[in-house]
Amino acid sequence: MRILKITSIAAGIPFFILFIFLLMGSIMARWPEGNIVYKKYSIPGRLVIAHRGASYLAPEETEPAYLLARNMGIHYLEMDVQRTRDNVLICFHDETLSRNTNVAETFPGREEDPVGSFTLAELKKLDAGTWFNLRYPERADDRYRGLRILTLEEVLDIAEGSGRKSGLYIETKDAHLYPGIEEQLASALAKRRWIPAPGGNKPAGDYLVTTVTGQEIAAVIFQSFDLDSLMKLQALSPQVPRIYLIKEKMKETQGWDRLLENALSARCAGVGPVGYLGWPWNTAKAHEKNLLVHIYTINENWQYRLFSWFGADGFFTNRSDQLASFYDIPVAGKM
Image (cartoon, rainbow, N blue to C red):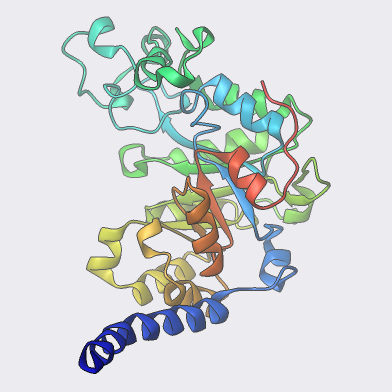
């Protein structure tokens, strides 16, 4: 019996050591509210980023998804910007249209063609909502049938419809496929007064939105996995914060320290790692270099709690109302 007890204690030692390691790491990783980095970029801690809109409740990157997130008063509406064959900026995530449109019925044989090979008129013929009702019948809504892919201009209209209560968190998606998309994006946003004109010297403080809770936050944040794209955006609009997105494979091939140096080379405000990389020692290293950490894509309360304990400054989430509730941020009306 004594041997069994000793064996049980010995077996528990590695878990105890791991717990202490995680505890110390999380204490070192966390920044206090009011941290100077939050103030520098006008990006608060405890940030809620509506990943492709309120995409748990409505089809991603469609009008209802963005209206829901906007009307809730979520900090940021997140989107992926690509370009049509006729040079129009649109908001759509995937490289192809097969997952969440009826492209197979509308354009047989073009299911795996890249998004950028379609004109805007062709894309507007697609149903970008019915797939959601079929995949998630418990959340289905007749209003989602026949929804259209949105242009960037249409998403700006939605964001402005609230009196600019939410900011825009914009990814240049597969930027290497769209030469010059950074200039086109910066010009489009400047024309609508979301950011300073490219090459202009107006301070970032002139381009803030006031949330429903009265916080003044940066109107726009740029994000990309593509370091070259971030560098181009930095040259065009240095006042606009940038986030370097990080996949697990990038960490495997380059290492965490190198990725942080990449972010600094593009003068990024922070990094956006996949959840698998949200360990406290990674977050602590980013914070040592005064880089924010926004983790994607986090959808469960236990994950919010764990990664917040590990020091994360905010999350990309499909369930923005749930994350806001976790942070004790009041949620306004819905669609």
